[in-house]
Each structure stands twice: as C-alpha cells, then as structure tokens.
Image (cartoon, rainbow, N blue to C red):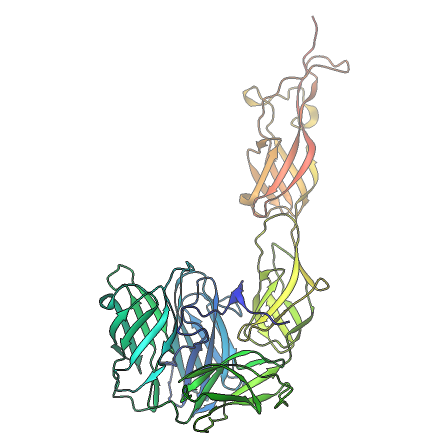
Length: 559
C-alpha cells in the first residue's frame, strides 16, 4: 500500500510550500567538524523543504565522500539540531549509517522556529561536517512563499534578471532584500520590482568563482521596515554556471530508493542539465518520466523495476541524465535502490498498559527503509532501529479522552519515499487503559465498633480514617480524589501501592429515629453514601455504591 507522509506524530509530512520548489534540497554547505577536519572527507546536506510548516517534518539527507568517492556502507553520520527532534527517536540527536554514501533522517518541528541541523562524519580518523538551517513557519496560511525561480542559472559576472514567482509578497524594492551566498561570501541583489506574485531582481556578481558552477542559496527578506521582517530561505533557486548545454553531472538523488512498482517522485541534484533541449533520465536502462528540469535539478517519476528496460527488480542501479540537444550523458556514479513494497506481517508486544512503562515492539515485514515514521493505534512511536525486515519501536503514552482501551492499526511509512503500509483488523495494537477497581473498604461506617457516641465535630458526623483497597489505583496523592457522597475526603495518603487512606469528611446529618425497639442513644444509620475514587491523570473513576454509612445515636419518638 502506498501512502504519502502528511504529518509526524508523531506522524509527519514532507511538504515543500515555502521553498523554491517542493523537492528543492538545500545547497551543500561545508562545515567545520570537531577534531581534525580534512578536505578528504566531504559532507553535503540536502533538505526537501527548508521552510516547512510548524508541526510537520522535513527530509534531511547527508552525502558523505572520501577523496571524492562515497564512504563505505555503514559509516556513521551524527545529526544534531538545536530545535525540534528527529523522526527515528524523538530526540535532538540521532546516528544514521550510510548506504552508497548517503544517510537520511527527518527533522520534526514542534512549533515555529529556526533549527540549525549539523551532520558530522569520521572516516579513517578524518572528520568533517556540514550545517543547514530549517525555518519552521507558523501554520497560518498567510505567509509569503516562492514556488519557482526563472531562470535557474546565470553567469558569475552577475546582472542576470531573476524572477521569483510565488504569492503573498508585499512591500517595495526599498523594503525587500535578496542576499546571495557563495562559498561563505554574501552579496545583495538589486531589487527591481515587487508585486503580490513576483519579485524581480538583478543577481550580484561573483567573479571570484573558479568552479564551472556554484550553488547560490538566497535569503529573501520582506518588510525590512517592520519590527519582525519575514525571512524565506531559497536554497536551490539559482546556480552560477556558464551554460546549460554542457556536461550534465549528477551529485545525489532524493530519495535514493523506492519500491519496485516505480512512480516514486525523485529529485536528481547536480548541474549542467539542459532546460532548453530537455533531458532524458535513466534508472539503469529504464527511462524515467521527467516532471521538471532546471539547471541544477531534475524531478522525475521512477520507472517500474520490471517492463520496458526492466531487470531492476530489487536491484541497485545507476541514475544518469542525458542532455537531448548535445547527446552528452552524465556520470553513472550515483545509484538508486529498488526495494520490495512496504508490508507488515506481524508484531510483538501488541498489548501494553496505556500508562506505561512501555516495552519495545518489534514490527516484522518487508521494504522498511530508514528513516521511518511508525504509529501504534494512531499514536506516534519512537523508532529505535530499522532494517529491511524489522523495525523496533518504543510506544509513547497516548492522550486519553475516555476510559476505554485504545485499539487501532500499526502504520509504517518510509519518510524519504512516502511508501508505507497500514495493518487491517487482523493485526492491531492495543493500549489498555487501567481503570481503578475497589475490592475492600474498612471500616464501612463512621462509627468503628459502633461506639455509644458517634457524633462528630461541630455537631456533624464523620471523621476517622477509612482504608480503601483495590487494583489500578493512582500512584500519587496529587492524582487521587476520594469522595464520600458529594463531599471530598479531608485528607488522602497512599500507605502502599493500591491502598488509599482517606479521612472521612464531616457531614451534617439528622439523628435517626429509633427503630426495631432500640432505646434512645442506640447507634443507627443516619445516611448511606457512595465512595467515588478518581484517577485524576487518566480521568477514570470507580464508584462503590452505597458503600459507606454515617451512624448517629437514635432519638426516641412519642411522649
């Protein structure tokens, strides 16, 4: 079953609204790793959306090379963030091993804010790192956004007229800035015009660029005259390059894998892609469907693993791009892995107490690929480990809206491809809501031993201590409420688990009329009430009906 990831919950969505394009990764940015850094080790970071909505997740993928070649499989890449958490474990740090030099995770933002994500790797005693900034946007639906840029490349001398197309733009050229950054050097563009749907500018020059092409991330700032200007990050809108008909080069593919059925949306990162004559993209020998082309990225739908040009079933194949006009084909050093469709066959520990403590759940199946998002009965779980056939997760505590057990399907989504599966009614996970139960109340009245004088203070009746025994009782005094009828107990303690000591509240009660031949002053029942025990954490209550008696000396009738 194929699913699109909309939210991390964790559940999580990789949605590109505010970035230059929905599939736009961030520009590679070298960083200073801890320890001994080495240019022999290179780390590049990409993201599917650098401006996701608050409360969603965005894909982050690291490309690690040693002397220009992918590092060995299993190399550990450490991701850290100063805002939000990673999808695999719900923490601010996660370690992911590489496959073909790539390691992927998902960053989830709990609210609006800016996150600095750093990826570090050490190979053969040599280290390096890279950093990318993710700006989680308030989910107001009224923020400006950039959908695409035209053109996507221009000469390093600058002066290219660039149009940023999008919506909800405001202000004027005087209150708008566009800052281009290349190799750590930032320069302002000349803003020519600002309308609600377009911003036109002239690119700054970077004559010092020595490479044939150079990515130029853009920081767009609207409302510079406001106390809180709006800032958008456009990581891949523009590349400084000499021509679009040269030799195409493929640097990375996002995602780097997908199911055998094909039709996975894949973004190919590189340079030199022909926007005029068009391109052809091949996964092995099978041709993909091209969705869009810019100088530095091509978006395609992966071809099925079988059929025309097939032979890709469960295989790892090179991805190549051919510029149609020149006939030149790119390098074949970047690969894409075909995998079985995601399927869940069974799971362990499928029933657990909703209040915890929780034990790990192992999900068995096929087609699992890190990073994954997992939910148990609709509640996001913390992912601990992932292999192709097993996922180990730790359940998280559900938000209880009633005292009923929570039962629902198990869901797994491969975050970077959106492929996933959800179990049917034959395989469910259950959170058992432990409802308190009362087994014994001692004493059961306000007059232990039926003393001759059972009157309480202030002319009322009550006082004394009652011990309530049972199961699934609250574990803290602050979460415990005991009522005698409509009155709350004067004091509550927990001498030991599943035992509550409650002080009987004083209540006003009329002395009963003597009956059954009793003489005046004989203790008799004045009132009988329910005892209600409530767990304030879960909101669950148990009622011992007519379980407690208030007793007073009776009064005689007649002359």
